[in-house]
Length: 103
Image 1 (cartoon, rainbow, N blue to C red):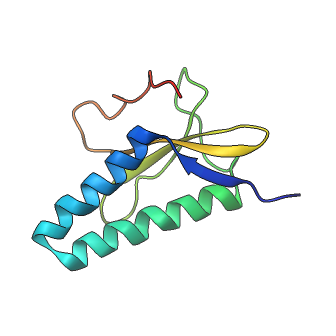
Image 2 (image 1 turned 180 degrees about the vertical axis):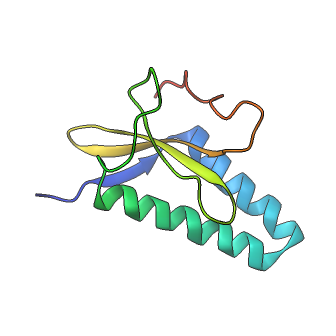
């Protein structure tokens, strides 16, 4: 079976880069830990895209939360690729704010 590539939609890229940049202003080690945890999540999703549960009532699956930073990764697997829809903080008052995103 061919390994699928993944891509982040624009909003997910902004979330990922924005959180990294914000953490970098306060703590380089914490920013690097966040990036490593999220990239580890991307690799886990690529390795086993059907290995994580669906978000109730949606076509999306969700990885996470990560161990230290408590972030989740929402994604959709297509025939050709894995689309990362959101990199979100699972402790947010509305962690499913991204659920209506189109791409």
